[in-house]
Length: 171
Image (cartoon, rainbow, N blue to C red):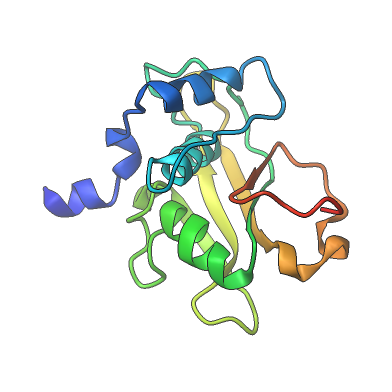
């Protein structure tokens, strides 16, 4: 039971009021900011939202935007190390413990590692949907860092980008 619970943290996520307002604001606003003090759940709530959209597993309490099909997402931080240590850990769990983050273990389809930085994901492939009106498919999450430079941020059309910390103006 404990093992099953540790591999599906998303199922037990319940936002407090400020987090719930942040999630709900996504229904009306393309850009949002959750600003609060240290260790108050900003990163956890952002990770939960990414996992909800990536999997298509919208909880009963959800009032934010929904996606009925998968789409590409980027998750980012200041450096490769900080992206690995915070957003990657919140979403995936430690590299040796897949599914202990917000993305449930049964939804993790595949991953690839980033070159040159130990234990760092480049891409996470997440099973999306397959029930009710949510189409089955795969969500591709790419992990980026601001220290890679602006050029690495050009290109594809995305459905969602998570900036774990404020990015520099050129990004």
